[in-house]
Length: 107
Image (cartoon, rainbow, N blue to C red; front, top):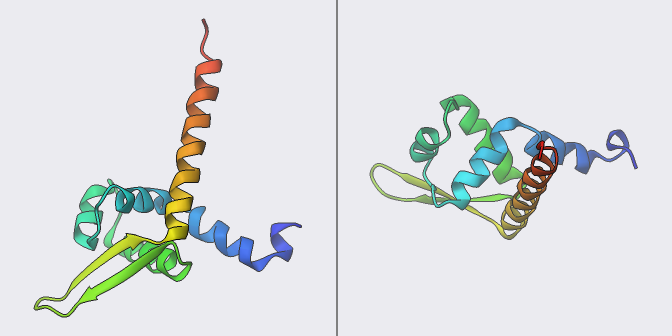
């Protein structure tokens, strides 16, 4: 089944195909949960792009959003079960990348 005929897969591509999504997910997995801290943690990301990515990742069900009724209001993000699964897959991809790079080293 091609991605053109599967709208759910196209949504997945849109969410995780962005170079920032994986960085944001990894930062949340590392314990960075607040938008300001995420912006400082993910080098090079703008406030606008971070907001878009958080909205997409939350909308797709990879992150959950908790808003605390404080003054000023506090917002925190956490990985959902599916977000945790994706982080595991990303870790496997990184391991494979290292393995491939190691195999291609002159030796």
